[in-house]
Length: 153
Image (cartoon, rainbow, N blue to C red; front, side):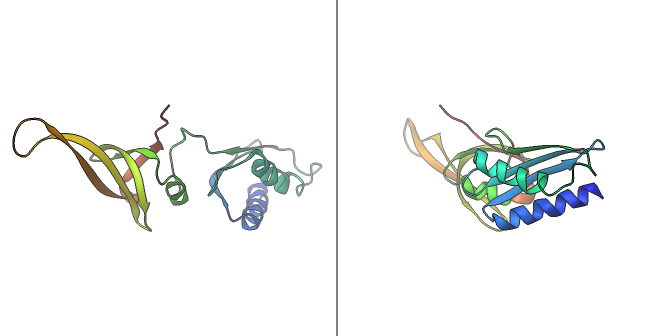
């Protein structure tokens, strides 16, 4: 019952802000609400406050005792939503699939998957030495076990 009330308020808030989307939503047996959001243009503190107020200001504290935390998806948090891939085009991703791990720059997203591109040094077809070759791979969302943005300094 309480979870449904919170979920309806959360959906209403996210419908008002279509640039924001839900990553995780839980309500514990002690009514501890945890919400993780992300946004097409990132998430500001004000965005977390907006979601928090949309829920907290619409639940009667005399009727329900609860705690509420609203977070943004962290930089090292695995990507779980298709919109997260789109907003990270141009960044380096480490993608784990059943067949192994691939690291490359995400160049495109589709309804079914992503495209990665990376450079490798390979022996020249003729003669001595090596040449830089650009490799490309399309990976279906359904094949991705885990994907994280690689932070480089």
